Image 1 (spheres, rainbow, N blue to C red):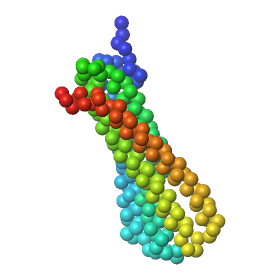
Image 2 (tube, helix red, strand yellow):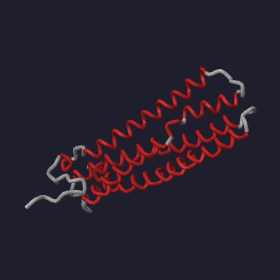
Image 3 (cartoon, rainbow, N blue to C red):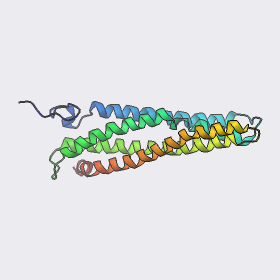
Image 4 (cartoon, helix red, strand yellow):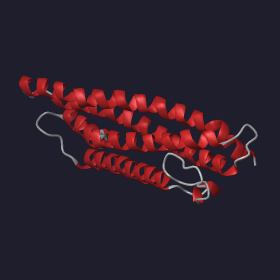
Length: 197
């Protein structure tokens, strides 16, 4: 009859069965690369801002806070969503491929896939770590900006309530960090079979 399909609809005779890249792996890789580019761009932007901005009417505290906010812009909502989407794609494929490896490592292609998925999980772990650090830096920077002398109290309170977004992003990034570590551990036994051969 017909060959069994995996959840993404790839037959066992496809390129993935020989250890080639699947579309969903490619998509996750592109998303992780895009988020990495966002991190680099944001940090460089913060450094340029810190190096070229002049101390404004509220002093150096506001300048430092603004540079921190600028450098941490990558840890915003869209950045977190991109990381969660890539995490979901990698987890989905890891769930499938790690179940394809028998106790004797009979399915070599599955071990190759698990090895690659573990690498993607490590990459996502690094980006979730940076996102958590960025959300914290954004929060601290925003507090520095809004507690500088001369900032009206109403503006300060508005900023504090807006910081709830940064706290939410921090919590989500920390949850993603824990989840990607678990994902890498899920891939570890199957990936070790690829490394051993």
